[in-house]
Image (cartoon, rainbow, N blue to C red; front, side):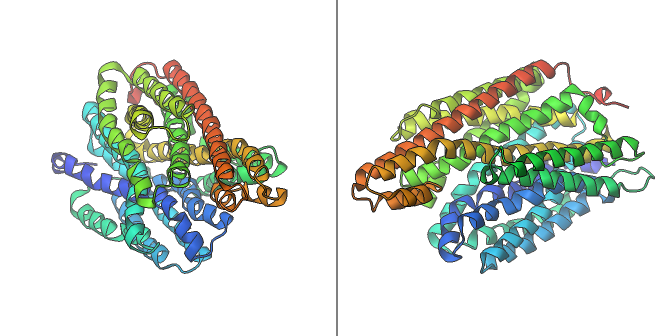
Length: 508
């Protein structure tokens, strides 16, 4: 329960919550520019590099629902604070890691800590900002922080790697987390749910198991093959386990998640829109940073700086999207945002290898950033505004889980689409330049390896140009696919997001 004093300092509280969100989200992308350093200094294989990235995402996505429910019961502030302490400790562990295995373990532990921070921030925000108009604006700022952090990560990581060792990308978060923890003690109010019922441990275990299976299958899908028995079996098994979770929750007096909220169109459409937005975002960021570094030859710092327009545009557009949703309704703002995102992707889907940064790449990034900004806050408000006060923790976890699942699926699916367009053309370019077929096939599994092999080909300039063209074809395929997903998301949003958010929408 919030007090008058808590209400008076609500905007200061929001600042602390945004710092917490920044820490969690920036760590999802700050490692991308450090991957070459891990390969060089830790002798990480391609599989090891993938798990340095995904080791954070897997427990983060799998435990968000559990984190939100635990925060509801034990108190959102103490759970967030404990999460920050854990995040500091595991960041220090990652910074000092001297092997790939140790770094992956540290990253996984960071993901666990993050899962108990992220949903608590949104739940606290929702309880502190009780006025719907103010809450929409606050969610806009919260969403802008989240969206901009995705693009800020490569910039910060690139700047650090220009001057320090690979561990600096993790060490930098420790003092920020310490300041956030200290400010939270004085500026963040506590709230929790009093149900009088036993905690839903069966729901927590089954949900974490089902989500772990789902995220693991999404991550490994490109490696196993999307049509392989392991991948299909993983999706089927995760669906069965999550179905069991729904069955358990429908019988509980105090469920971990009242799954009936998915029968509320605004709730479901809002969560789906967030997932689509971050599907496109994470897939695009993953590919564009490779384009900047490997095709255009930018340094780690320069590659990060070249994504800065995305961060700036997202920071500007997200609060504007929240205000537009108040005036015109979430339905048209969200569908319009996804349409803008699709337009930006389509520009990248037809650009040449040497596309002008200022006349082609920046306009495409600004369109995508504006689209994401118009989606994030109104979608989150649609989800949170559809819930009763006792459901906001679990609801925040659902919103954040779909966001993380969408991002993870975006990297996996769009990365797989990219690989399909890239590999055969890279093999042809290398083989046609005098590289043996076996070496060409092995090199085609990695853009960096393909370019390295091409540079030693008898006809090196031709080989390099062929590999760059292959990269562009893969990028085009991925951007066309992402644009299609965004358009479908826009149609779903305009169809389901009718009416206004209200607690009366929730099944009682």
